[in-house]
Image (cartoon, rainbow, N blue to C red; front, side, top):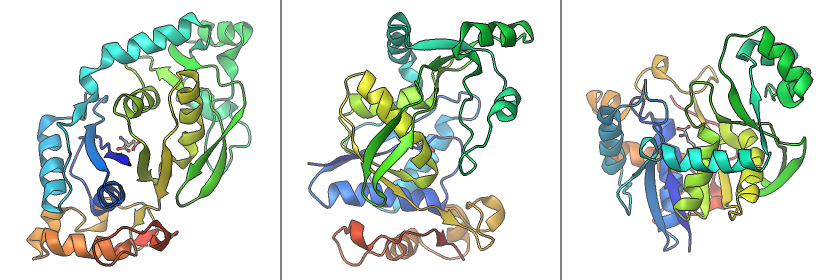
Length: 285
Ligand code: GLU
């Protein structure tokens, strides 16, 4: 039985691209007799708010997406993530990193397809001391990735092999990272299928590596192509009417949006078929 989830960050209104991904996650799970939950990934305490969580929930409900359980809230689980990070540290699997974003960009030679991987500067004692001396920044904590790769199964991309990065587990402001929280919570919630935007495809090998270190089962993935504007860029406010509220103001109902998105996912009727989902971005006009 599939147990799926949608895990938005409550930092603004959902746009039709987010809702389309949520619809795929919900339909794949529930239309095969499984269940589906919503989770709030609100680690970013500056931009997350209850008001946004409420409006996102209202929009999801309006298109027929409901959580089988009260949504789990990541900001209430910092102690859980910290304990797991401390445990990985006790096993010698992490190291302190003093690099700034700029240091990383400059040192990351030949990024693959625009993905900047951590160049490993602070992985060694000598490298770390050099950066520490030139920095007044507190340390972030990174996972010792070990320059390996991991393979996972994706319903749209097939068998994917990706490089494991030395991901940040605890940011230098002391907050647990997205990568640790998502892995811990997918396991804690018994998620068997992760449907999300394909902008996270490159992060998946590192998450799978972390799952293995923590003894978790790796879920099946489905990285859905994003919705883009007519300029080919990822959908955003500047593309015009992109939220349910914008569209309602133009006389387009939530039901109509749902129908449009359902069709854009290659679906007809009340069943879900992954093989019909288009493999290229959907252009919102
Ligand atoms: N919270 C992430 C986002 O809003 C989604 C993470 C995930 O689905 O794994 O982009």
